[in-house]
Image (cartoon, rainbow, N blue to C red):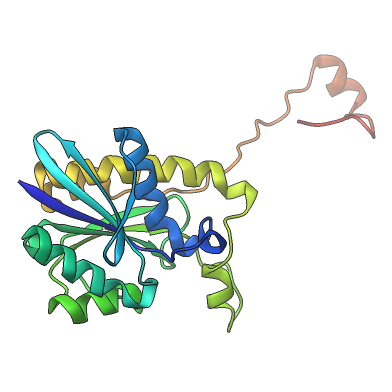
Length: 218
């Protein structure tokens, strides 16, 4: 049984670590885990791996984001893979960093890569795994944001998310999108720091002592 796993992004070193290349990053991690390497092929970089008896064809389109559908259609036809065995891994502005969403089908939500795939394959009835990249940009700066790199403070969380994304690909291939969604769809909430109320000693209560100025607090 064969599956086509498509990571979306832009080719070239200048885009390698940008938010828009989260799909490429997830597939690079998956390939590295499996000990396989990407090789140049028609319209894409391609690698092949096996997972629980399933054959996974991994592609990173080399057509640039806005023409991703050309590579997807070609490799679906080349490998004779039906649309319900296709999973597209893509960045998503609507989700915060650290979030994943797996869907069996859905709209393109304004994503140009997904728009082109739908146009090329004749619809949106294909699974997609969305990786949250956040939306911390001012009006008119969306392009700069998606083509910018993740800041240092988000990279550890991104690494954990990519690990979960790689796991999600395996779940999709082994148990299908509908069942996998229950395990994959999570959101990361920022933890609120809790501070315990200060407990005064008997001496403090009597004298009203407080922490001295200049004392470092953790």
